[in-house]
Length: 170
Figure 1 (spheres, helix red, strand yellow):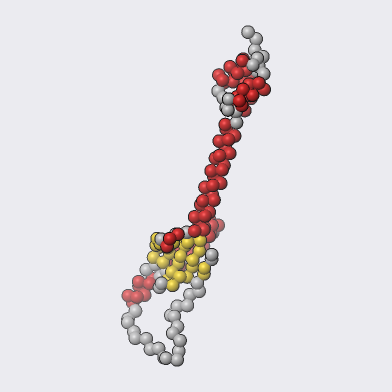
Figure 2 (cartoon, rainbow, N blue to C red):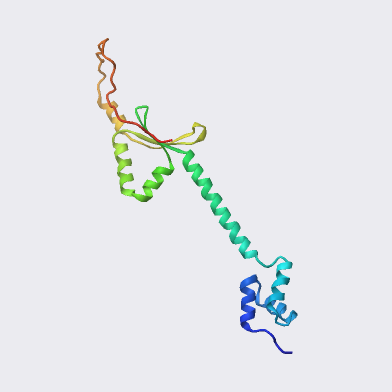
């Protein structure tokens, strides 16, 4: 029996169709070395192109996962508060991007936030809140202060003792 195909034909058929050596050789023998007819049979049986479809679905799954994570990153908020007042209210995606681009600055800001007695929390949809870090500067300030009666003049507006600017990005 004479072979009308080469090892390159077998390799090409395996690469295109993703079949085993045995299947490639049996197809080439069946069609007397005609790789085009072997590929047509594989296509008709649904075996040709499985790898391309799998790769496409994997890419679609990855894109869908990225979309879902982006939506969650924009929905969950990072909130920094001090004495009940909101100072910063950002989508969590922004601090994560900042952490990737400038980790030392973000770590320094977190330490400064805690030293000043602020609390850092995450708020999700439905007003679920999870406190991540709570600065004890507020507790120390309350423990060190003696209760003093405030003297407020009737004509003067009441002023807050710390006028921190607040930042909100929607």
